[in-house]
Amino acid sequence: MSLAPQASAPPASTSQPLIVLDKVCKSFGSHEVLHDIDLTVDRGEVVVVIGPSGSGKSTLCRCINRMEVASSGSITLDGVPLPQEGRALARLRAQVGMVFQSFNLFSHRNVLDNVTLAPIKVRGIPRKQAEATARELLDRVGIGDKADQLPAQLSGGQQQRAAIARALAMEPKVMLFDEPTSALDPEMINEVLDVMRELAASGMTMVVVTHEMGFARTVANRVVFMDGGRIVETAPPEEFFANPKSERARDFLGKVL
Ligand code: ADP
Ligand code: MG
Image (cartoon, rainbow, N blue to C red; front, side, top):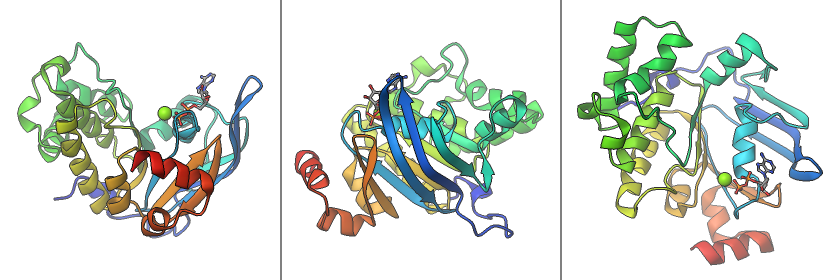
């Protein structure tokens, strides 16, 4: 099963990383929330970001899709600096799929509309085609029978899978997940993680903020541990979990494992 056929054939011209953050800082007033973040994400790579609450994980995601503007430093996506505004920014947003803890579906539109609205409005895809693609995506995330329902008629896990389908409908180059299972009842967590696993296996580039250490161990190519607005440690999961180098990472793992 391929959740993201568009991700399986990266442009042959580019072997450069898909995302490059270079000395990114972000302050809110005098409060520096991200400090000198250097991070590259390769095509097809799954980077799992972990760290205590308030360490800057969400802000990092929001800077990558430019919902927040970095105070200094640079971020490039596919070799192109993040645009400032206007159509270029809208195009960038279309390339970066984002899935949040709170599913953020349009509550008064059915699931099919939720998945087709942006492709039709932003990408100019004809409705028929957008609907056909949306139905395929809903099948792939296992809720093909929910197309005509309103979000409130779905379980939390189904809503989150609808949100994933909605993001995929834009054929993004990368998917950002910010604690996608934190608001879910335990029995629904795995159905969402399974969809994310399959997406990773299909070759999608993913940045995933999560407290699901099992997912980090088994799916991540790299774990990034953040604390206090800094990347404290970056390592392959087997190395990170077996032998965290920093005191802060050991302390964090002691609390969550
Ligand atoms: P995490 O996702 O790791 O819990 P966040 O990125 O949400 O961390 O937050 C990091 C820090 O930035 C926190 O201290 C938070 O209060 C602060 N922060 C986040 N967003 C804003 C904002 N819009 N205005 C002011 N402070 C913010
Ligand atoms: Mg957060």
